[in-house]
Each structure stands twice: as structure tokens, then as C-alpha cells.
View 1: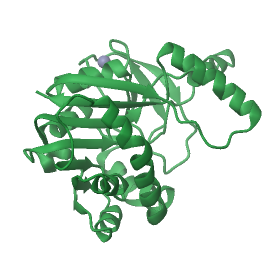
View 2: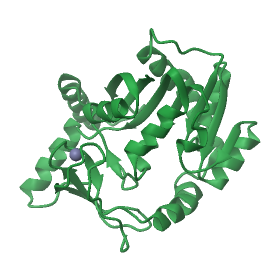
View 3: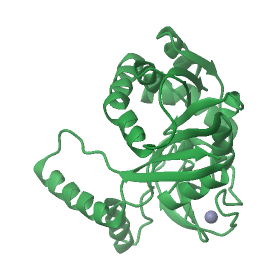
Length: 290
Ligand SMILES: [Zn+2]
């Protein structure tokens, strides 16, 4: 953090004016502490951002080593979630486009390979890229085709039918370049599928108001791992600029299986407001390559 990188140009609009947006308590080894918001387009970003060395050390160490250490459990949980929720949601979004198995599906930032396993179950030939050696070893042990690497340029020109980046875009330093490389991994008419966090939820807006009333900085939105946080409009703009001719984005929130009654009432109110406003915790997007 001390040798952090200051973002001087907004990767969505090119703007150079940012205002303070949120702050998190400082608990190392977390990557980021402060967020800003672009004054021109509204993109939320960690500011300053962790250095390349700090990011590499974090994802090599704490991220897979302690935070997300249980590889077998996470692999199965992710596979089941994508089988029942994630892939059906993508299929519904790209309905009418020419994407269906059999074909090649690429997953960038594939982690322990849960999505790749779900894709294999669904009849796709999956190929993954993942920076963590530990995660790559686990995915390969499941018989999955995974290379070690940090970005989608590994698959540039791969002529894949579909390329996924599931909760990866909010961890990268150059989201516009990342999406351009992701789109370049699919054939013309092929599709990219993105999952990421969204900026605006009713709960966060209420937390921001409560912090302001106490004279405090509002809380950090999403995880302190994240470099950028998007809205449906900003993500659409980036995907069109990356080489897509059609983009569809949906906002959604997860409903945990077990919530206390007062938390359920509060969250229920927030989710109802979110639906009315087109807000929510997460974005899922598909873009079709020109
Ligand atoms: Zn901007």
C-alpha cells in the first residue's frame, strides 16, 4: 500500500478528476483502503492501487493460501452454483445468439476450475488460465486444461465460442485492456460472459448516509481486493469499446439461505428497493463480438 499506484486516467472515460468515495479499516494483508469515484463517468476505483508486486504477493499468498484455501470444497461449490444458477443465467441472457455446445469455452481467472468443470458437464471443451500455481495444480488434478498466466491474452486468436471472466474484472489493473483481450479470444459472433460486483445497492446508500450523519467517510463498496467497481452502463460502455456489437447486462442480488428475521426484513426492504431502482449487488453481462 505504501508504494501504491495512483490512477491518473479513468479507464472508462479518460477523465482525470476523482473524488473520495469510501474507506475501509486497515487490516493487512488487504490490498486497498480508499476508494474514489470518477467525476465524469461515476466509475468507482481503489485509489491508490496496490503495486504489481503487492498484488502478486497477495494472490500468491493470502488469497488462495488462507482466504480461499479449501480447494476441494470451493471447486465443488462453484461447479454446483454454475450448473444450477450461473450457466442458466448466461444462457437466458444470450438467448437468440449463436452460442451452444459443443464448442470451445475459455475461462480467464478460472481459480480451482469450478466453472470449467460445469462447462465440461454441459458439453463444452473448456480451457482456463489462472495466475495462482496452487489453483492451477488443483484444476489440472481434476483433468482440466489450464495454463498458468495472468490475463486473457493467453487466448488471443483462440477462436473460442465463448470466453468467461467470473469475478475477475474487479481485480485487474487495466479493465479496458482486459476486456479487449477477452473479446479477442472469441470468434466473430462469439460471446464473452462477465460476472462482477455493482456499485449501487440500497443497503450501501443507507450505510453511506449513516456514515455521513456521523461525520465519517462512507464504507468501502465491495471487497478491498477490488480495483474497480462498475454499473451496468459503465460495463456496457467498456464491452462495446472492446469490440462487441451487442451487450446485455443484468443486476441481481444473492439471497442467503439463512437470515435472522430482522435481517431478513431489512434486507427484504433493500432488495425490494433495489429491484425498483434497477440496483443490486452483482452484474452479469454478455457481449457478442462484432
Ligand atoms: Zn470516468
